[in-house]
Image 1 (cartoon, one colour):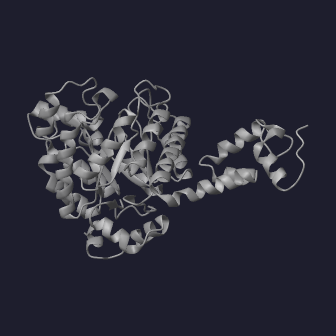
Image 2 (cartoon, one colour):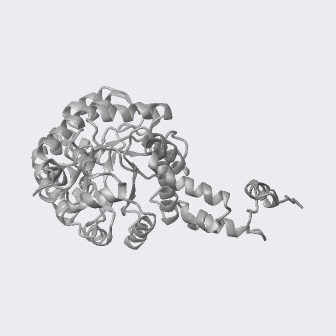
Image 3 (tube, one colour):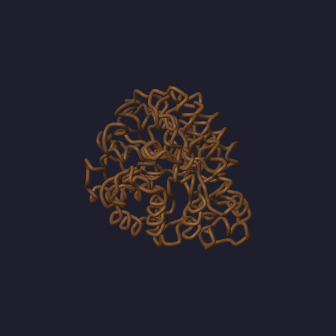
Length: 430
């Protein structure tokens, strides 16, 4: 089976590429060249029939991912499907099903059936439930059975923590961290490696993993098991050691024609973000970078969507290609619908803010909003806003008698004053 990358290497312009080129307003040659060399990916499993393809990477708009899924403490698939509907409403490009309890395949099948967004999973989360074995009893190749099952269901990209191999693990053991390993998948694999005194199965059988990806055109999202879980641990030797391993795995995947993106931090002080974006791009030869946040402080509990949006804007402006949203419930509980909405909007703002810095064409919508504000055209303002529904609700809660201002400035609205005086009209503030 040929992947989008292999088609691009042969100069074949697929229907998925046509859709991406139209959305992004880039030409055919630009897209073919950058998909062929790995700087742009189009995660599109051949079995995901409802998918509306999107590109991720160099010269394209920053994309947003929404996490959802059940845990053993919160099992409500109906609410999770409402989160999917909310993601679709806001035009979210990627959804990750992080369900880690019970038999997850039914929900995942329904999700893939209805979702136009690309779908991602973390197969190691599903290993215990799918295989019905305790962690220590799982055999190395059993993990690949789970990967195959996810790929066959139509998953477009998978987080695979192949970089935490024995070399990276040795580096981790030699340093002192406050939060150790905070990646769920990374911690499971590290525990399995320690209990079985064995190599990471995804690293040991990486070629077998690539065969599965080739069969269904699944994109590898190479997970950062050793990402920092607090600002203290950011940019340490363990994080960089794993990144080096990921760069080597990326080249192996590219040689086989498998699409790759790299996952990154995490928690990180704002002054370290740009350097981390540049390091990933340099070491991994321009592979798309997928970051969680980064959260720029560790004390924003209940408001981590703000901390994440601050870091996400800086990351997007300096090289990140896709942002994983962070909700107000981060570190506290499974997010509800209100949390998801807040996380989506905050992250879309961050992504667009980053695009304003790196893609001049992104300014068009801001200019339209600015003109609507000058014209005091409320309906256009609501239409251009990322969350126009909330904007309209807030305006109407304290709606002025005259619609040539809002209830904050009233008759002293600067826009209205200038509109009048520049037309030659007298201005009355009474």
